[in-house]
Length: 190
Length: 244
Image (cartoon, rainbow over all chains, first blue to last red):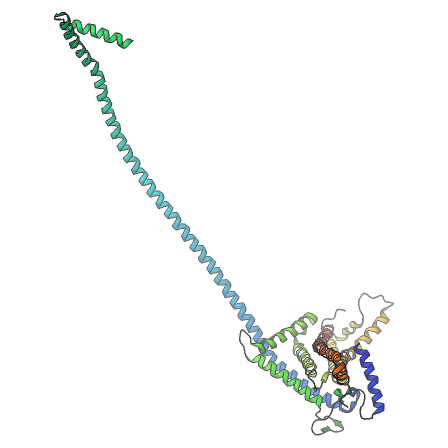
């Protein structure tokens, strides 16, 4: 598309040359200022090349390199600090762990001590109680043992008195007790 | 006269006529824009390299990005051996780019739209690359014309083709830039002329084209500078790393 238009325009402008002598078609092909262009191109490009390569580009290169090294240094420092931080974190964790451990130990120790004391105390109290219960049981047993004799005595006395009142005879106590005992035995056996 | 789209490419003398012997080296509008481009590059990059802050400001960022852009371009195409030629390729790229871009300003002059300018640059590159090739590889540089893995019967033909293509490098390099710049500016002028001649009624369509073309031409201005620089890198690569 571009080329077609150029051709058209080249044609058009060449026609114009024919029409007016002032225009000269493609000014690029007019060698009048070729040497001037070459000369000034050499001068300007030469100066550009020399100044850029000698003064400006090394500075930019230095800037870029120093930035790179600075960033690398910073990354290194950051890495170091990261490692340090991780180390610190580990230490911290260890300390916390140790503290928890020791706390547990202390707690367990105290618990054991308390339990020991508690069981001692309990044993003591239980012993006391046991002895008291035994005493009481003994007493009850004694009472139980002595109770039938007393009952016998009472029964013999009452039986003697009743008989005396009924028949008006003085009864031999040993006889009465023998009978009562016999009676009690039979009722017990029943 | 101004309606002629080729008029913008006219070179005329500014100031007095300067002659060395028979050769006319007067200061012209072309010279003026070469000097302006050079000064602009030097001023921008001077300011861009002055400060050494860790976090760059805009102009420093611009120059540093350009530096790494060209550096990467050279490294990708010509390898690490091309490092000594960095300054030259950087200057070349910036010079062509700034000349192209200054040409986009209305009523300015496009230095690179002149075949003689681009041809001198391309011829300089061609001769320089050829000299570098012969210095680095001696007569072995001629192996460039003998590609490996080609049947012997075809070899004479291939060698001739390779030699022709090698010799046409400066022409293709210079004509590519010159033709692109000239074509673009001519087209813009043509459409601008249409806007004027069609007037208020029909001028809107070519005006739209003009606007679109301006964007396209700015792209082309960058692209052609890039292509010019990268082809230089490729030629340099042939001369430095001979493995055809």
